[in-house]
Structure formats: structure tokens, C-alpha cells
Length: 158
Image 1: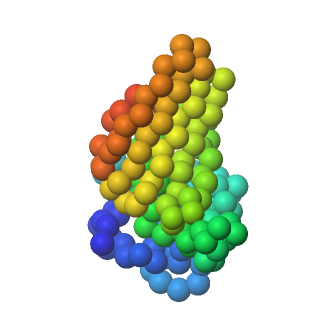
Image 2: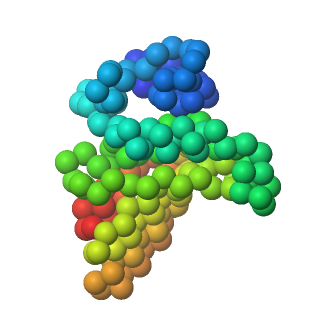
């Protein structure tokens, strides 16, 4: 279970709560599509386009990619949203792309003229980061569990 604003959150959180699908506890999302941030108790705007993309990703069934792709784990989406809320706060106007991974995880990508930052979430608390600076050709690759500090620093470079 994950704690989110004092609420125990199970595996159905992202699909039945975050996205307003039927069933379950209703989330800390208000009609203006904002989600209260953990710890700082600030709000993070979830644009409609992002909400729609997450709905599509969570609806993917077995073999969704024609190569035995597994359904995406709602916990991976939730962890990805937590990561985005943490690293984007006051830094990046670039909205990330969320891409499903065939093993059930997701990849969050930021692309700009200055470079690319990709965070592959294998499962909650297990991610890999790939950064490339288009101007200097600097390339960074690292692994992480729950510290998003380096991701926030790399995002600030884009």
C-alpha cells in the first residue's frame, strides 16, 4: 500500500480512482483536474490530454502490442505521476509523454531542443534514467528507487 495524502492506496487507485472510473474511493482530484501533491499539499494540474492518455494505457489488454505485451500495472502509473509531480514542480513547462512498456511498466519522456530525459519505470521504486544533452552530447544513464533529485536536476537542463 502507498500513502497518498493520508489515504491508503491499493493497486486499483490509478484505474478506479485517479481517472474517475466507476468504483472505489474517490481521489483528491477536484473538478479543475488538479491532484493534491503529497507532502507539500500543493496542487498539480493533470491536463485532460494526459488523463486521456493514462486511461488508454490502463485499458491495454494482454498482447496489446502484438508481441505478448502485458497490461500496464496501475501502480507503475501512480508511481510515475508521483515522480512527475515531484520533479516538475516549478521547473519544466514541457509536458512529459507517457509511453507503455511491454513488460507492464511505463516510460515518462521529456523532449526539448536542448535534449531528452527518459525515465523508465520498471515497477514502483525501480526505475532507470536516460538523459542526453543535444548541445554537448553529454549522456547520463542511472538507476534509482525513490530519490528523484537527479531527475529533477536533469529536467532543469532541458
